[in-house]
Length: 332
Image (tube, rainbow, N blue to C red; front, side, top):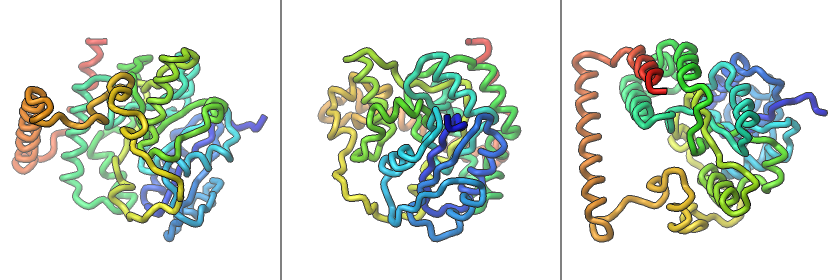
């Protein structure tokens, strides 16, 4: 026995402020015995040393490996019964690890993720958190330091711990089909048995979902990946993409999800097919194309009104978001 419950694998390339906040929240919000494995893809700032001082095991790659290859490298070093694949631009909530591990065991899941900005238990709340985060980023402007990142979370949620506790209370044991790539937890033995991540696919989380959904349908020996509606994690969303861009140094072939699976499989097995199958065209599906355009215009109009509201009245109070979560109590 290793004495470690959870191995956390994270890949980094610079982004010191995100790494500092990531560590801070892990230290204050985690409840199980944890090891931290950091795959350092050529950081030139002090990030690697910051993780070492915090007790993390740093694996220098000498280059810039893609996400799935980085995760597989970390998986090979993991000793915990469970393994969590995390982005460095997330803020975990109190008890996040205990909640996700409990979801795995209680519901016999192969893979579990938390809710967050990408996906909430209801479409209404998903829209609400996404729109508020969009407004917060507009109001904050440039977010560069760890203090900026903390300020953005305060502006977004007000009482961060209170918001997470409200989500936990309202959506206790509520599962949502899907996967959120910024935070994925599984049994280590299971990830090893399926061969880890497919390094050819950059949308690795969606590929993992499809692999397990296909297996659930054809072999029936695993369940479908789920999102635990009562565990919330904030994701700054695409911080890595907006940061320093550098070509990958891994030399394996690369495929898109569409190339690997084909449109028929995506429509049959993926939890949200429009994410992957592309938008309808006027020539191929004129009715759906026009409905999509109408929805897009309505969204743009709503966002425009929200921005005007900020100019004249300021950002809506964070408590309004908490109230929207509270309303779901009556529906559950």
